[in-house]
Amino acid sequence: MSSGRIRVLVPEELGEGEREHWRELRAKSGAPRNPFMEPEFTDVVGRVRPRARVAVVYDGGEPAGFLPHERGPLGQGRAIGLGVSDCQGAVLRQGLIPDTRELLRACSLSSFAFDNLEAEQRLFVPYAAEEHTSYVIDVEKGYEAYESVLRTQSPKFLKTTLAKERRLGRQVGDVRFVFDERDPAALRTLMDWKSAQYRRTGRRDRFAQDWIARLVARLAETRARECTGTLSVLYAGGRPVAAHFGLRSATVLACWFPAYDPDFAKYSPGLVLHLRMAEAAAAEGIGMLDMGRGAAEYKDSLKTGELPVYEGAATRPGAGAALHWLGREPARRAHSFVRDRPRLASLAVRTLKGAARLRRS
Image (cartoon, rainbow, N blue to C red; front, side, top):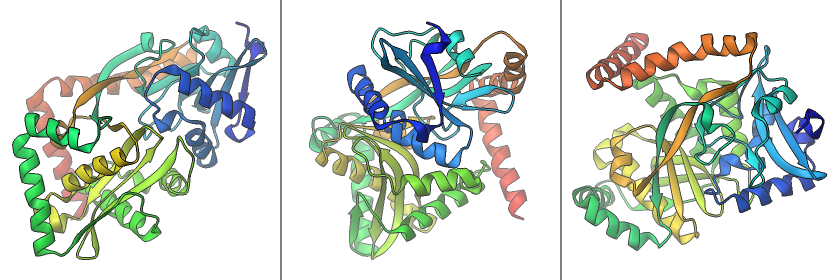
């Protein structure tokens, strides 16, 4: 396929016809309809990331593929929204597999880095360096069916969480859940909680990065069938005690930023929130909640299954590929070294928390 049949556009330059082709390709792909893979997500990223681009691959005179990406100053490419997007890759017509190096060349990219590559991405999976696990909750058969699964696989967890929800209502006040809260103050509260959590655990505060804060604010206002910003809030006694912001399509709720008020930690409001989110999602006809990659005890308790996602980079020969390797591979190998050694990983966590305490003192 010649590069003359590939156009590279700023996201806002995509016409409605091209966007509709994109949506149709996703619908026919057979992959879960993750909202991070929809044109609306790329559109919003383009409004806060000036280097956002979309490669449109034409076949037979019509759009047959899309590669949303960001291009660095030296030609290093990355998946759109890398660092926050939980599902990445190209959107291609079934059976169409462009030449990867030719596609990168058409985009003026020396590399294309990804850290949450979708499982069925035949174009890029061969370039993966690592496989990770994304944890999912299946509510396709309804919330009652999901609860029955929990009673079998995590009986103590379910019983304890529901008891804490009842105790929260008795000791704090009436418990109320809103699946799609539109109050901007609730979103600000969630972001404050999440920033405090990042600092408390020694992690980089994502909301201290202006583009991420603006991205979330814009997505909170996005309303499209396959990509809607959704803020869910658990209230007790009239005040928020836990909240989550994510994206939903008609069939998938992509869990993204959950947090809770530490003053109510003994009630496990975050776990209660996730159960209520699963219940509300099932009622809306959503069949799956994708909690994303990264092991966590709460995910193990809530999950019904797992999906693979991949990290790595496709490259083409040249100085840019060498720059990518020098910039990312040593760090990735260090992370893998630590992750494969539980004692060392535990020490790393304690060190991060200690560093966070020193920064606050």
